[in-house]
Image 1 (cartoon, rainbow, N blue to C red):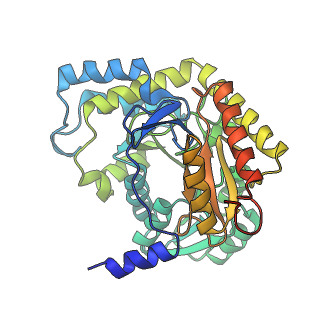
Image 2: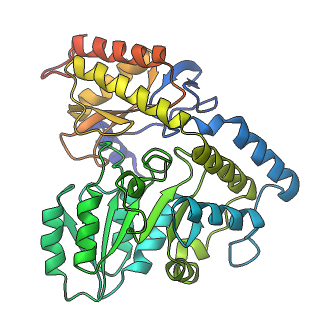
Length: 392
C-alpha cells in the first residue's frame, strides 16, 4: 500500500531503519551484534545503567509490582508518583509538578491547555516537533519567530496584544543544534508583554546549571519561568516527563490535559528510578563536570580539524555536512569505523542542513573522546565534509 512512498523516501536519502542495541546505554554498546563506541545517546550523565537506579527500580517492583494498572485519576497514582512530583517541584524551585509519560505527551498535553481559542503562541522556529505539534493541537494563533531572535519575537508579541493570553515557548537546549535559548531576553519580553513563558528543558535537565536544574538556573532566572517542562529519560537515565509550575497551573493541567488524563500512568518502578536519579544529580556534580570536560575536549579536537559544528554550546555537537545523501554515507562510514551515531536529515532539520548528530556522556573516557576525534579526522581526509563526493 505504501511501497511507492517508501521508494520515494529512499530516492531522497530519507528512509530510516532501526538499529538494534543489545546492551545497556553505556559508552560502548552492541549494535546489530557489533561492539561500538556510543555517541548518539541522550544518556548524558550515564545514569541509565547506574546501580542506584537499578536497585531503586527493583525494590519498587518488589513492593508495587510493575504496571501501575490505571490512569492517574483512577487508581494509577502511587506514593512513588506523588514523591517524585514533590522532588521535581523542589528540584525546579516550583510550587508543584505533574508527571507525563513522555516529552511528546507533555508538550502535546500542556500547550493546548495553556493556549486555546482567542490566544496567541510565540514559538521558536527550531523548537522540537512535540512543541510544534502541541501548537497545532491548540486552537490558538501560532506565530513562529526566527531562531533565537528575541527582536523578532518582540515584534510578534506586539502584534498579538489583542489576544486573550500569550504563550512564549522555547526549547532550553535545542536538540539538533546543541545551542541554548536566549532565555534572559525572552523572560524580559514575557514580563514586558504579560506573556506566559514555557521552557522545554528536555536536554537541559541535569546538564545546565550549577546543580543541573536546567536553563533557568543556568541564567539565574529561577522563579521567573512560568512553566518548566522536562524529561526524565535523558540525563536522568529513566523514563517519562514533567511540568513544574505554580500550584494553580498544575491543578489545571491535572483536570484538563488529555495526555495526562487518558494515559495509564508510569510504572512505579520507573518513578523510583527517577527519584534515585534526582538524588544523584542534586548531591554529586562530578558526573556533570566530567560530561562538560568531555564535551570541551571533543569540540576542541573537531575545531582543530576545521570541522563545522555550527553554534553548539552543549554536549550535543552537530557535525554539519549539508547534503542528505552524503550525510547518510558519512554515518555508514563512521559505523564501519566503530562509532554508533546517526545522520540527521529532513524533516528533522531543514533542507541543506543535514548533519551527524553526536553527543557526549560523562562515562566516556578521554581515550573514547580522542578515538572519536581521530575517526572524524579520517572522514575529513576522505572528503565527507568537503564539496563534492567523498573518496571511495
